[in-house]
Length: 333
Ligand code: CP
Image 1 (cartoon, rainbow, N blue to C red):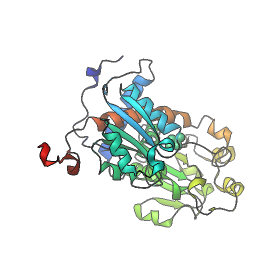
Image 2 (image 1 turned 90 degrees about the vertical axis):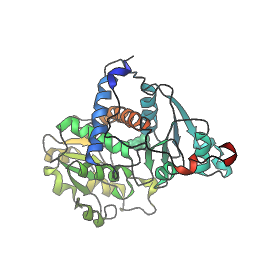
Image 3 (image 1 turned 90 degrees about the horizontal axis):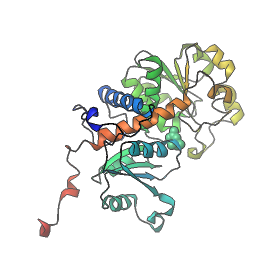
């Protein structure tokens, strides 16, 4: 077990109790998280994987949507830091009896936990909770809005490969319209100086994004040779009200990454994908499992990123909790 004293304190420049999204973070804050994640990654990959910086703390995984990577790696990250982890099961909870999410979380908070890690289909749900409870809130995906730790691990993976973010051209390909990963990547990558291209069918890539300074392309073939990183987003059938393209076959033909397209890309090109991937749709198996792919490295980096986010947020106690929660009944004062 690593001596906790060697880790020092959370950098004074980090002021946040919650991690809600990358849109609200500046470049310096993102770099603090990435640098800390690098320190934790070194330990994770060296065998001595326990750093009890959060010993005595309790984190609750509140997942109202399915997850493999995010839920497991947040749990692992918290445990690597010595925290206890409680898994909340939405499907067997009293939500089915009509309890609201705020009441649910306030009751969990009353059990004296320290942090909730929340994934919910409603955009803004993590922010709503942060405004109504005292404990730390980490957004594990709020509908199609933001998925900050996913973008951080994507950016970490890119930075590990290229040693930098500024000046790189990163293409987010596919279902931009429904992707919280895309949104968080856009804010994070732009903040760090990357050129971002959003590529996909016009039904999934709104021209309005140009107002944020990103480039739009409706042709993957036209951008192949000038992109450093392709982030291949999953087609999120579960969020689509109407099918945005005639067939999956047509989508794969126009936007799927395969070895023929890869051969036209830069020799140094990096392939990443947030997962889960639809093999044969966004990416063919030979590309997903090939040498240009860092898809599983992303998953490793995700544990380190989530350790950084948990440690940095849970050690920020200076900012006062919401005042409504601090007021005691007069008879108790
Ligand atoms: N990338 C991602 O969020 O995966 P999960 O849905 O499995 O957590």
